[in-house]
Image (tube, rainbow, N blue to C red; front, side, top):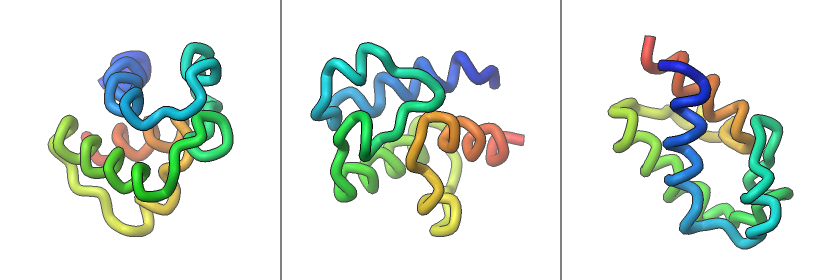
Length: 82
């Protein structure tokens, strides 16, 4: 799966949890969920669950702890989809 496709789906998944709309409209690979989008830790867990469902993958605790930026999530999804 291409990085662009993953980012497009991921954008849809995180939108309901975003607190900073301006940062969301400027979303890039380097966007940080907590610092830029102001998503709280409870909602990060929801995003992880959404990602698992959407991409039909299982995310372990080590990977979950790394899922703080768009780039990190894309890398984890690509690794799990191999």
